[in-house]
Length: 101
Image 1 (spheres, helix red, strand yellow):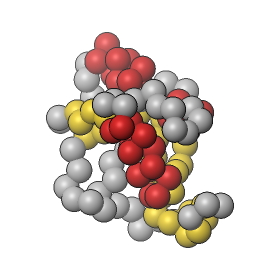
Image 2: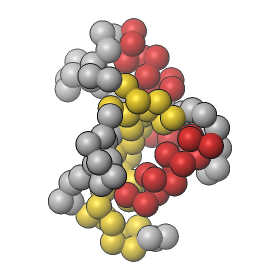
Image 3: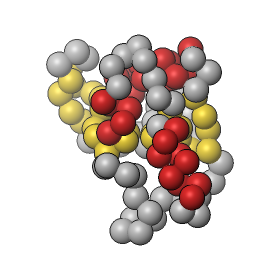
Image 4: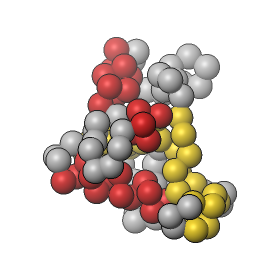
């Protein structure tokens, strides 16, 4: 996890995470999927993206490459607790996916 923090109106000061804008644009508890690379532990919150962005990634070689293959529509910062809530929403709907590097 990062050493950077944000001030969340719901959870106070939290480590930051990065997710595609589609995830944050979807009101909870709805989900449009939650995809990330495999984490190395509970506190290793990897960048996450939705199913639509995952399909885009597949169409462009399967790897994010800065300046060449980037998340469509950009990313947003979420606090670590909001990230976990979004992940739980996707798990509940069986739409949580792990992408292997």
